[in-house]
Length: 355
Image (cartoon, rainbow, N blue to C red; front, side):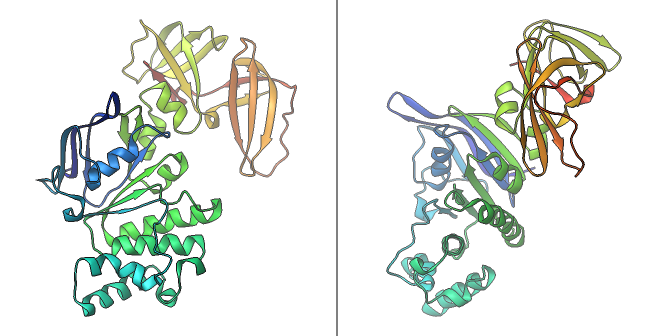
């Protein structure tokens, strides 16, 4: 894939603190790309350097092959939508949307045409005469998006754009953003700390920590094949046990783990050496719990009902805690707090990790 937005060895320091540390990423044209990580990991600083609001300490930003590192923000073919929306309370919706075009001194006729086009696309046509305080949170979010899109940027940058919305509206708006991005064919780059949001909207995700990018891949790639314990635990939930020794039989590994309190299994497909320190990771939804049989023995210590599934926390004989998730199929569950259970999983469900 040819890079439309190219970030090359980009770094940003504030005094002795390095916010972004030698990051290189290629983003294709028409991608919905997420920068995902906890607060303070450098994702918003990276986005601001792409936008031109921050000058990098080192490195290059390219847009469609052109070096824009020294190009000011207002001259880049990008536009940013902020979490606060930054709408002008004294202006109507229509004038809020038109503000950037007026600053660019476009003709009135063209401004009117563009505002009407984007308002229709975002279902805002009936609200153009209202003030922001007369709108719901979701409507204000769409106005901010319209104001960014009306300038027809090549790349739309979104900094935690859905953070102020309640859960139901947030989910609805995530799907709306995906629909719009596909319809418009624009490149979207979104900053978020919400793993579910990144998984929902993204074609690819860059997971960041302490200014560095740890892994880049599709939602399925980063979830199913994490490269480290941090990625495995940050993106969703994961049970991670340190291995002591391993023996191979065909395409399967039997791994002895003092932490787990017995033998665990993994497919022998990962390029991870078992001669040094290594770990086994398995997602809770891949863990099977049975009252009889073989596997890691433990006792159900906690149980929670989440509608779509039942989440169990099992205290293993080793003392370690194991999480398991059973999908709710509508039948009565046969496990209760205090029950002795045996936990197991298919070898292909586990992932070997070297760090």
